[in-house]
Image (cartoon, rainbow, N blue to C red):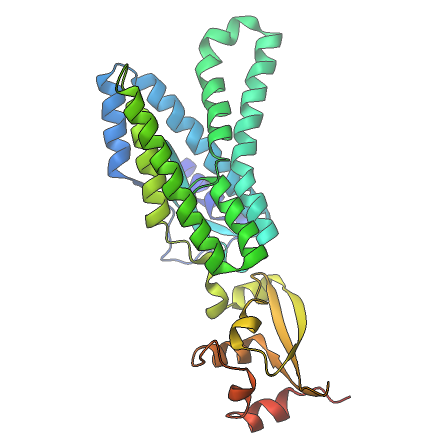
Length: 314
């Protein structure tokens, strides 16, 4: 059993190629609402249904872990929540396209499981009474996880597209609105069910989305300002952008893209190249800059350091 648990943890951390720091261990945690959710199902005499949905949710997270291992990332924590589970870990430096595929991996695994059960019924009809609950649960989780709100996979996918389209701030505002909107809709649906047969599962799902919206500490879209050495170790595409030095700092920030290393080619009004800023040099400016001020204002402060070292000779 101990050997199996070690293999289980190694798989979630990214397989044989993953880094294995001595102090880091794969952990499994349980949210208090998960226990309350389980007690409710036990009280209703539906404990088996609760266990099946929990197992399907863990299989869902295996889908995420499998793709993470494929791209060389390390996942280190599995948290059981009401209506699902969340696996998390170090995915710093991966492109947004890879994060979209990573988010899709879970629902695709659930969809494949549901299709596999249907195929099994076709070949062996007698298995239907023993697998119908698992098939329905797999299809349900695949569909529900595509809803566009945190902490569901559909929310992560939408956020990636919004970050790429309009930037981090816009994406976070949209996701906050989506999460609150979906939570309110679910709460209203629960209130409506109280007039006939109260559906407590909807209430737990509303809380799941609400806590995910306000409690998700997803820093993957703000790591431009952190160490990106892991991204460089995996290999990063270089994004070169030509910009007037009179452009505001906030305009240059919009060209930062996770998974790509930015180089800013700054020109004066006459079209002459002034200097080339690496991403590291630009981020040092951002830490002290008024983002509404022109980039040129901060080049003057470090004219020697930036102008002489960064300009490409024609």
